[in-house]
Image (spheres, rainbow over the protein chains, first blue to last red):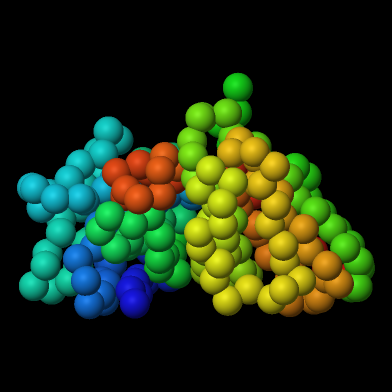
Length: 113
Length: 115
């Protein structure tokens, strides 16, 4: 079975500051890793994913995440956040080759001016 | 041109009632899902259908019954509603279930409140 831990339930940050949202996972099999974002009153949207290859993956809006197998982590980072990045961020894992996402409990990113 | 649409958006009902939530996707995906998000924002898969066939059925009470009339629709029927059923229910879809290359596309959710 897989599990995902997001230690920070809420991360407040000022606009243009850097941010890191932490994600650790546990699994006895190989996994794919994902970050989803949920804006208020909306469904989840895929932000980025790690399937294989380069351990550093990037999204189109400036977020990046690095897969660290030894530390079983997949932390999400952005060098400079915007007000519009305020949302709930979910880390998720799926056993390789099987579409069954297990989500973490989410981290609320609050960006203030 | 919404990709995954759910109705209704809000549902308020009393304990003991039976209610349904409908979901439709126009992405041509083969697989559809129901997820439940509780008051602490925790998301957990309930069911998954691949081409109208049930492939994932997590530990969900028998009061919950998914129905897939075709691969573009996955409805969720709930009998004898209980207070603990209050949550946001998300429908999602993806390409074939056998690959993780296809991201899930989520609907905007149905907020169910049982009083």
